[in-house]
Length: 97
Image (cartoon, rainbow, N blue to C red; front, side, top):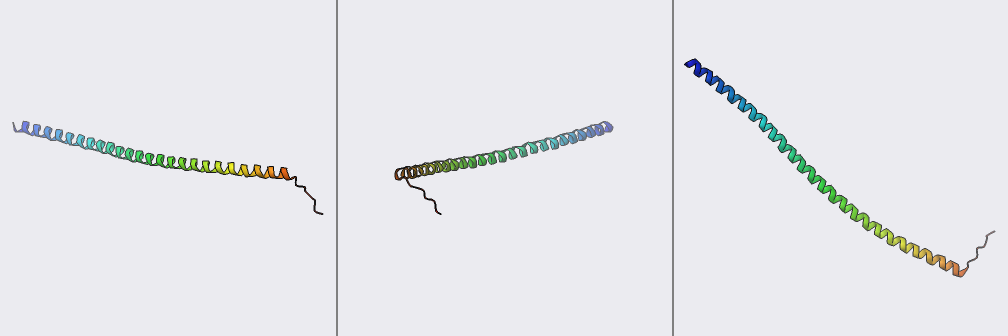
């Protein structure tokens, strides 16, 4: 009977060791999933920040394009006035000898 108790105790210890080993493996997997989720959260946050920066740059570019368009129209208007003024006055070009 003592032998049977000893065998049962050994089997119980072996079973407990297997459960402990599986729990260790399970905990490692949970840690991996947790770390992956944290990394994904960081990545999503960085992505959102980058999108915000792109939006800001887009708005700045649109403002610059609008200003450039205004300057171009004004320059064109001035150039047209110069051409009209020259045409009205019929300036003669003289050669300098």
